[in-house]
Length: 287
Image 1 (cartoon, rainbow, N blue to C red):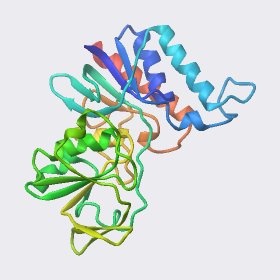
Image 2: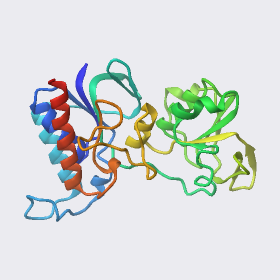
Image 3: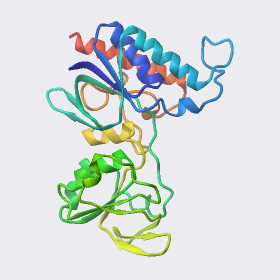
Image 4: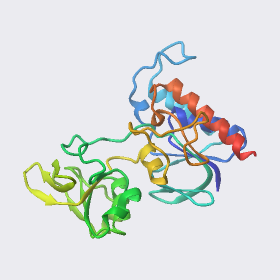
C-alpha cells in the first residue's frame, strides 16, 4: 500500500510528489503521458530559466527530479477510484491502494462536436456510468468512445442495462482483453443526438438512425473531473473540480490540483497547487 497515489505526471502532480516523498511518504505516480505540456515548443515566462525551454524538456526534468528522490512511476491508465477504508485506484492492468489521492491529470476531456450532445446533457447524455447507470436499468444505452475508458464504461453499464452499444464515431476500437464484452460495436460517424424531452435516437452521417435511451460520453482518457465525479466529489458547471484552500475536494484525503481546478491555466499555478496539496497531505497523515 502507498501513502499517496498521484494521478498525472505534469507540473502539478510532480510538484506534489516532491513534497510527499521528501516527507518520507511512500508516493506513486500513475500516468499515461505528460499531456499538453509535451506539445509546448517554448516556455519563456517560468521563473529560473534564463533561456526558453521546451515543455517536453521541462516535463522530463521534473520527472527525473522526482525519480531521483525515490518517487515510483507506473505508466498506465486510471479508469476508476473507489473509497473503502483507503482509496482503491483501478487501472487497466491492476489495482492500487493508498491513504491519500492527488488528481492532477489536467483538463483533458474531449467534448465531441456533435449536434444534440450539449442540449441533452442530463436528459439522456451522461459523462459517468458509475453515477447514472441506475437510471438506465433494462434500457438500451450507448457509449461514445473507442479507448480503454469507453470499454470500462461499457462494462459498468452491462451490469444494469438491457443492451450496450459502443459508438466509435469512425475510430478503430482499441484492441485489448475486453473485446469479448457482450456489446454491439458501431463504427459509423455520429451526426446528431435526437429526441424531444430526452434522447430517443442517434443519427449517423449516412442518415441511418438507431433508437437509444441514453448516451455515455467516454472519449479519450478519463480526466481528473471524470474520476472525481465517479467517486462523488463536487464538480462546478465548468467541469472543474471544486477544492478548498488546501486543495482538498469534498471527499476527505482526495486532493486535486492544476488545470482540473480551473482558473489560470499556467505552469506556475499548477506547481503552487501541487505544493499546497503535498504539504496538506503530509499534515493530515502525520496527525
